Length: 154
Image (cartoon, rainbow, N blue to C red; front, side):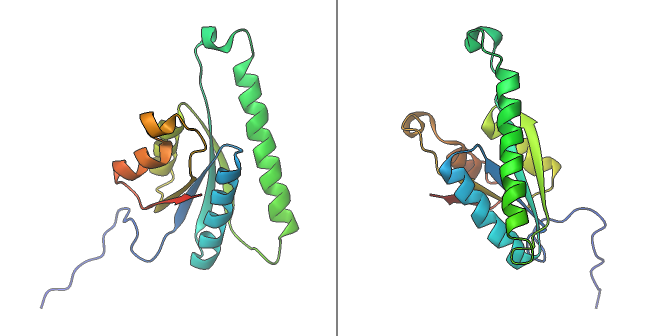
């Protein structure tokens, strides 16, 4: 009988998730998704990678507003909010977590983050935009990509 040799490379999802990516944008549903992902990470002993994707707009679309500075402020605010929540829950909610910022459109940013971080699962909030019924939300596009288990939190 031949025994199978263990793989030397990366293997996704063999002993439960090791990395769970949670996409946040400051909306209520994204913050609920991060909390849900945190519970999953705690129970599984996984790393929680919280990801904010800074939108990149053409200069003309910004109408003179410094978009890069504004999205940096949003990222810093989200990171501070998450740090404060983790500090309040220290000892009760011991989860290894990291905050990452990527640039681009939300779908591409989350795909890049999940690939680079070798995610085993992705958790996002349900879209709160009516326009996504026509174009398709980030969550739907992630599910259709079929590359990771995707949980959509309302």
